Length: 377
Image (tube, rainbow, N blue to C red; front, side, top):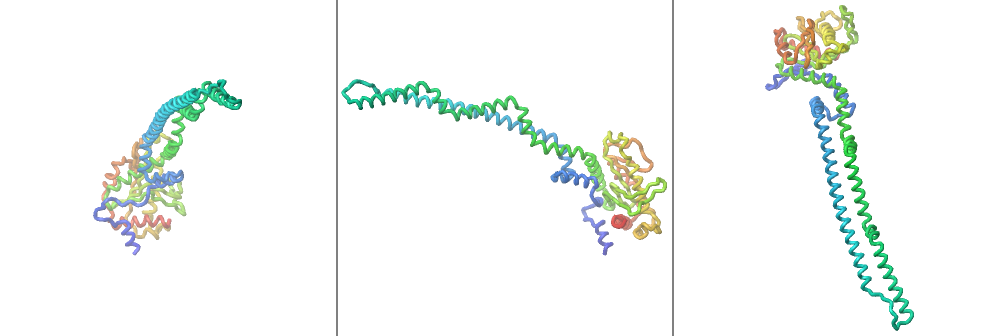
């Protein structure tokens, strides 16, 4: 039953699906997702979205700047319109107040409170005098303080006008500063994201390179099985006597199982500057260690205590392990006799060039064994 389930897992394809079977997620992509999630960038949940952000960053930032500048200019225009409206209201209200005061003065003049000697008793004369004096002083007060009264009646409009005029002057003389202050909170998150993506660029470049390799291998027929991020940790290290190297673990970018054998694929998406960096570890050294470990695991004699229990169903013939370094952008300056150095478009032609030596059933056994190793080694 288990064998049938495993066989179904590897070889169940619909009639319309003829592409290579892909197992596992790209390690650099997993690392990249973990880092982005750690910074709270959950919206960048795929490599495509990361690439889209990086590609569109300058345009998006310029759009934000243009929006803020446009909002600023619109606000300045509206302030100027509001200032004109306030000035008009001030002019109308001053004229209206002045008109009311002049009418009031004219009304006082029409009363004709003239103090004349008539046959009135003392109290009537005193009353006429007092009333006449009141209106006389009232008219004199209005005439003397007309401008002050108009100012008091328009004080709130005047305050609004002064505030608006001061704001306009500030906008005109401090344009760049104000726009900068408004931009800062809007571009902060965008700039922080860009800074972190730049810091994570080695992982991004690695994920892009490995994703392109996977996309290329998907073009192969469905009897090609690709393991992404094939990793093993050994309880007891594998010892490479010739190199005096104890191998405690291996991590392979891509392990491609085919009818012609196994391909150990290392992907490098290096810039020209990275290629010239003497501190960068050679991919040839990396692939040499993983090749040795995989050779022991796949081709050790059945008497080897490490693998005799698990490889009894493997093909009895030697399983070839061919080393490939895929350079996405810039090629390594030197060739290697230990690994084939290829560009991306050369990869599929190379793996298809070798004659098949294993049946589909034997390829299945190799895949089952590789899966089993991840559980027991």
